[in-house]
Length: 273
Image 1 (tube, rainbow, N blue to C red):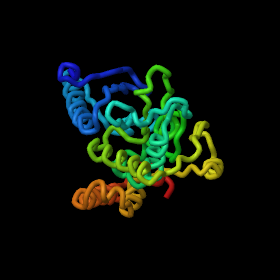
Image 2 (cartoon, rainbow, N blue to C red):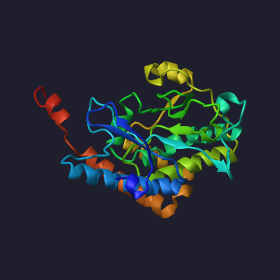
Image 3 (tube, helix red, strand yellow):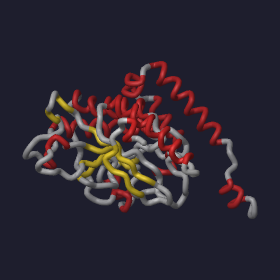
Image 4 (tube, rainbow, N blue to C red):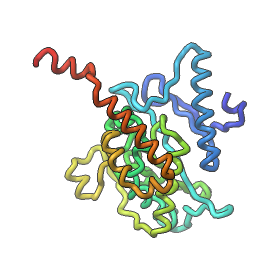
């Protein structure tokens, strides 16, 4: 159905969770990609209903199964030249590419409320596996927040980075705005890229992560809101109206959630207290 509507699908396969699918869209400019994602979600839901099943983009629908992410690949082009590609450099990654990653890492906690905007989003980020919750990068390291995919010698134009915390329920227009703004800020300010992480970051202890300078992303929507409130970068990127409205909306969601008495609380405390 997507192909018939002019949205190119490069790969499609079953993922780790029950009924979980990965569908990879072909690259395009940021705005076209965001448009394609909104159409994609509607089409997937409608096709599922026509087949008698239901599709959901909820980040973490099952406690003990993998969550649903929206791993996003990014690259910058100057005319026909990939600005991230530099033959002979480590991982063939240019200084521009390294500074772009550094910008994303520095500002990631500030924009996490945008890329992971629901209470449920943080259930996915605490689950390990392919939902990174620590600020680091690595070459082909799927536990890192930013991954530099394996380089193919004949495909310099495809040199790119992948941001892996973004979840499948995010607003792509806002999410891509803050991702690009953070990366471009890194280039403008000539940020230095820290040492890459080669270990499985989830398997390290807190002390080992601290020793490596690896800090966590916000662990709840409440924490993410508090970090975003102080961010000049996100405020400038979204503009005053969207920035204020977004924060007001998210504070309301957190307050509603905070008042809930969950089944977990009833099961744990009612019999013994």
